[in-house]
Length: 130
Image 1 (tube, rainbow, N blue to C red):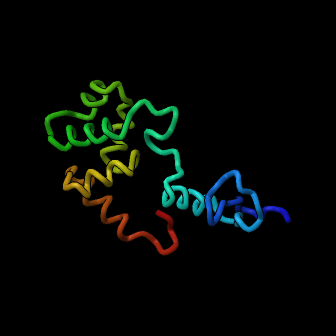
Image 2: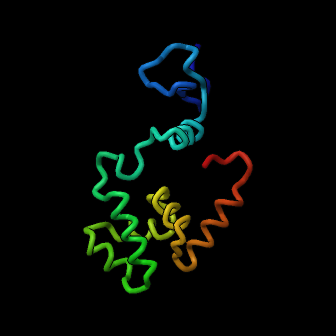
């Protein structure tokens, strides 16, 4: 049977990529497959990505420094040899989202962005994956 348009093979229920038995595969969208990887901890975001130059701890420090109001994004980027655009995305909860969520859940607050992103995430359209 060929792959339906817009779908890809997803490993379910044991998530073992080496287990290609038919009963361990299902068709799903790229979005649902990605959501599964987040849910099951098998994704390669953040420091799990072999190309990442930053760690979760460094990103947490970046968020804390920016939230303190004492440093600009440009200063922080230079301090950590990071791309300024990445620092902007981190402080808006658009990059390193898992660390940003930990920061916010731990009581961290970045003026203007924390509330806006939290509101957007709580008002997702039905069917959107997390």
